[in-house]
Image (cartoon, rainbow, N blue to C red; front, side):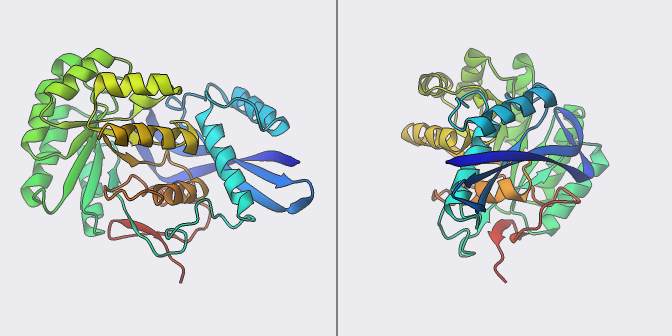
Length: 336
C-alpha cells in the first residue's frame, strides 16, 4: 500500500519579483513524499507549488494543508480542481517508480543529452530595472526574451521594447510579451497593432480571462499573435477545453502543469491543441528545482522547437541543489 506525507518549505527570491499579482519576495511549496509500506526506504517526491491570487486551488494556507492532509490519507481523491496537488502527486509517483532517482520521464533530457531552448524572463518593475534585466539576458546568450508588461504605463513599456528592436532585429532576438490580462478590451487592438509594428513575436493574455467572445474577436482581428494562459485556468473537463479552443481559436496556448491540470491535464490540452494546429509551449509556475526538473523532463517528451518558459531555477537564494543548468538560452542537465 502506498503511503504519503508532506512537508512545507519557503523559498526566498534573490530579488523581489514584480508580477500582476504584486511583488513576490518568497515562494511557498509543499513536498509530497510517497512510499510503499513494504519498502519504506524508497521514497518518491513531488512538488505542490502555488502562486497566491493565481493558483485556482489556493484560498488559504489552512485550506490548502487540510486538502493535502486529505490526500495523504486517500491518494485516490478527486483532484480535478486541485491542479498543483495533482502535479505533486503525479510526479511523486513517477519518482517512486524510478526508485527515487528523479526520473519522471525516461528520455534524453534527464540523461544530459538534450537541451531545451528557453526564453529569458524580464520581470515587471521600474524602467531602469527592466532595462538592466534585458541587457543581462542578452549578454547571457538568450535568443528569446519574454517581458512582463502592465505594471508601468504602456508608453514607457513600448519605448523600452522599441529600444530593444532598434538594437536587435527579429532574426537576432525574439521578443514575447505577457500582459497578464492588463489591457482593456477597448484599447487592446490599438496596443496590439503598435506591438506588432516592432516585430513582437506574441502576447500572452492581453485581456482578462473569461471573456470568450471578446478574446475570440481579438484573436481573429489582431495583427499580433495571441497566446492564452490564465484563460485555461479552471477549465478542467474535456468538453470545456474543446469549447474554449473551438470558440476562441487562439494561435498559441501556454501550459503550466501546476495550474492546468497537472501532467495529465497538460497532455490533454496538447493533444487537443495539436489536432487544431494550435501551437503551445510549457512554462513553470516558479517551482523549485524539484518541480522544474519534472516539468523539463515532461516537455522533452515532445518534439517542440519553440523556446519554453523554464528558466526560473535561479530565482531563489535557497533553491534545492540540482544538475539543471541554464546556458546560452538553453536548459539542460549537466552530468559533469
